[in-house]
Length: 83
Length: 151
Image 1 (cartoon, each protein chain N blue to C red):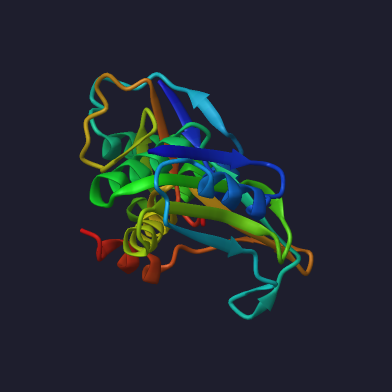
Image 2: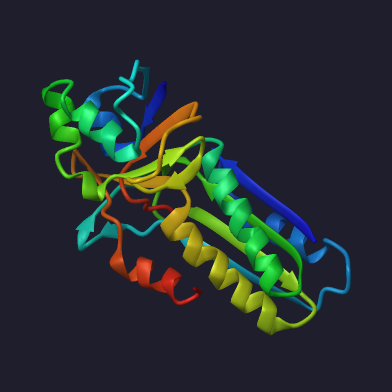
């Protein structure tokens, strides 16, 4: 699964994207965040407060409970501040 | 309806963009434009520039979706949204929105609608530069409420 990061999440993880092999038990966006948190100190820090993190599947906004089945790209980012 | 959504790495020529909307054809009787401009301060602190990051593909898609939603709600004849990314200095335009309709009510309302949704749902992020430091701009609750009123 391709995962992309933006803004301070990208900076805290020091990566713009990565390919990961998600275990079958990871079914939702919330599960992905929990799983990522277990991958090391920088992830734990970046995903410390999952409530403030937004997500998208294939460039469409989704909620933590959204299932990831069929997704080809998952994005995580902070609340948007454009305009 | 004629619509254009564009992400730009170079300065936005608001005169040229306005002209393009005004001349989009149809029986246009009203054009409303909005320019969001980079201020020289953020929460009271002086800044020398903003850095705008975006999610390529999704940013355009999100804006286009809300332009389409505006078209369904109001009788628009044209709409144009240009959003700058990269380093932007105070005084420069960050975002430009123009809407055209036969009468002003639809053009005013649609421009506001598009801006309100752009602020809260289009994937762009601002970082300030100034005093040798960089900081990410926090999302604004006021913007969330502004978008809520259209529901």
